[in-house]
Image (cartoon, rainbow, N blue to C red; front, side, top):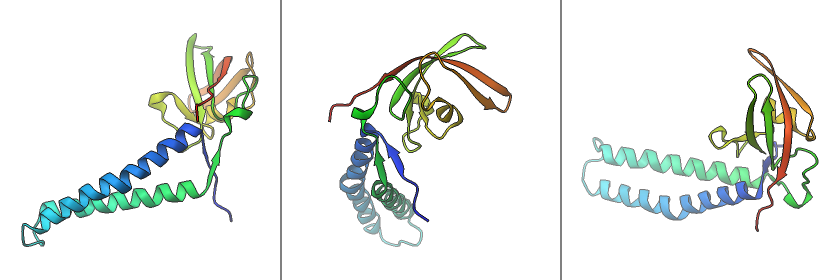
Length: 163
């Protein structure tokens, strides 16, 4: 069975690459220094600083391995192929929540980039799935635990990133 592709926008790819670089060059060095200092304090069996530094080191190495694995299986969204006619990964959409007469703005991204606090929703989320391939003016219905939520797609914007 093949691994699931990690769908990323150009910005998402750059963010992961920058995080990986930071982990490898800065955070590894900092935690190695902490371990060295803690070792200098003598008995390691009851050295809380040493234990904390080793735990931090393990977390950093695990994150490095996870990012490296993600980057091996990336499907990069080519923003040049996107248009403002239909919703795709990389599109920013303006929606009207019909029940509350409230306008919402979301950017559709791959699951690795999803961040609801920055209005970035996954293409795999119920709303993200419902929006894909829709056009301005379309009504979108999303099944939620409390019942169906109805939206009208007001506008689609494509964010072209400088590379």
